[in-house]
Image 1: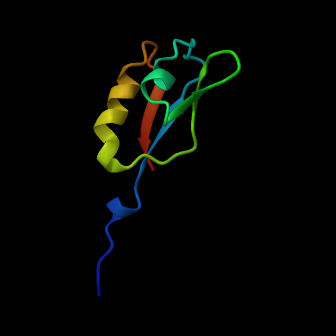
Image 2: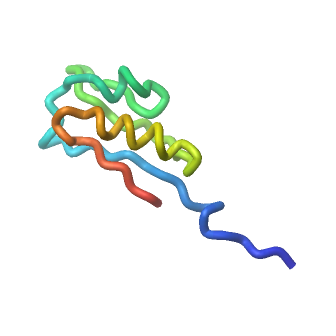
Length: 75
């Protein structure tokens, strides 16, 4: 019998605080696989799960937002 770990099912997800986002575009410029832009240039999170092995890169993208509008959560 094998044990399953919770890490196998966990992933990271971004969210954007639309009250803070002013449309600098760094998120979708730095990580077009995780972010898109809306019709007026504000970032939108793509519906993708981010593996725990990509945590460092994901944290860098979140930290690059000058307004601090990007949040990274474990789900």
